[in-house]
Amino acid sequence: MNKILFNQRYWRLPFLALAAVFALMQSACKKDVTEAAPVITSVRNYAASPADTLVNSIITGQWVVLVGHNLKDAVQISFNGVPATINSIMFSDTSATVLVPAVIPFPSVPAESLNTIRYVTRHGATTFTFGIVAPAPTITSISNENAKAGDSVYIYGLNLFFINELTFAGTPITDYAAAGDGTSIGFKLPTLTQSGPVVINTKSGTVSTAFNVNDPTTGVLCNFDDINTFSWGTGTDNSSTNFPGNKGYYAVLNNDVLPAGDGNWWNWQRSINTNDVQWIPVDSLNVPIDQYAIKFEISVPTAWTGTSIYVLKGNSFDYMARYEPWQGADGVIPFVTKGWHTVTLPLSEFRGSDGKGTAAASLTTLLGSSAKGSVNIHTKNFSASPSASGLKAAIDNIRVVKIK
Image 1 (cartoon, helix red, strand yellow):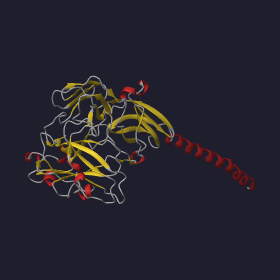
Image 2: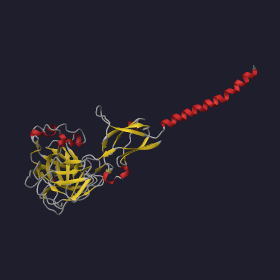
Image 3: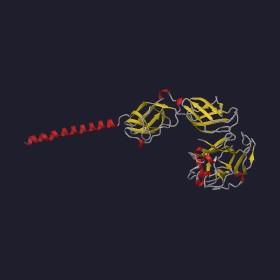
Image 4: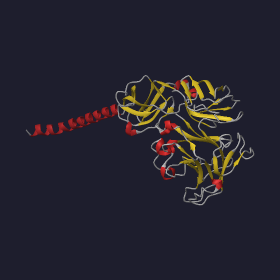
C-alpha cells in the first residue's frame, strides 16, 4: 500500500510539468494569433448609415474605414506613399477610421506607390492595392485679382495638377509653373481685355471662381478713382514710388510702433473711412453670411510684425474683422508683399469682442436691414505690450463680392 502511494506521488510531477508546458503553448498560440501582421479586406466610406457603404475608390481628404484583421497598434498608415495622421482611439482589431491626406502629389508619386494603402503595426505590415484618385481642383485664393500685365500672379488651392486648360478673366494662360503637390500655380499675367472668372480644367474636373477677376466695378465700394466714396482719414496718393504696381489712387495707413492697447484710430494716418455705401443688395440679406466677403488690395513694402488692421461696418464696434497676416501658427512671421496682394475677409469672420468673439449670425445681424453703411478700416495694437513694429500699407479697391 505504501509503495502504491509513493509511485502516485512522484508520477504527478511530470504530469503537472506537461500541463504547464501545454498551457504555455496555448498562450503562445493565442499570442501568435493576436500579434499577427495586419490584413485589409475592404474599404468603407466613413459616414452615417446608409452612406457608410463599401467603395471602389477614394479621394484625398476623405474619411474612410479600413476593414480587416489585426489593425490595432498601427504605427503608420500611408496612401500613395503619403503618411496619414493616426488616432488610436478610432482603431479596433477589425477596423481603422482614418483621414486620407488632403494633399497627395500625384504627378510625383512613384509608380509602385500609386493606388496603394500601406498599413504598418508593431507586428507586421501589409500593402493593399486600392484606387486613390485626385478629386476635382479647388481654388482657395488668388494673390492679386486686379494685377497689371507683367505682374506675377499665384493661384492657390488643392489638386491643381494634370491641367488641361487655365483661363484668367477669359484669357488663356499657357505658360505657368504648377507646384508638384498641386497647391499653387504661378504665371506672369498677360494683357487682359475683359473681366471674368478664373477657370481651371483638369483631368479630375473643373473649378471656376464665383467672382470675376480684373473687375473694376462689381461690388466696388471705393477705389479712390472713378468710384470714390472716401470721406476722411489718411490721405490718398497715386505715386508708384513707394507702392509700385498701382492702377491709380489709393489710401495709406501709416503708424510707428504703438504703445500697449493703443487704439487711437481717429489719428488721420490710421484710419480709412468712406461715406455710406451699399454693402450688398437688400434682396441678398437672406443668403448665408459666408457667401460674401469684403476684399481689397494691399501693398506692404517693409516688414510688418505687430499693428493690427481691422474693418468695421459703420461706426459700430459690435463686430469687426481683424487682418493680421503676421500671426503665424508658430508665432510672429514678418509680412511683406511684392507689389499688391488681394485680401479676402469673409463676412462670417466679423466677430464680437474685438474680433475674437462670436461671429455675426447672419447678414442682417451684421449689416442691418438696409445693408448700408460706411466702411471703416483702422489700426490698433491689441496686445498688452508695445507693437513689434509699425505699419505702412497702401489699400485700394475696397469691395464686397459673392465668393460662393
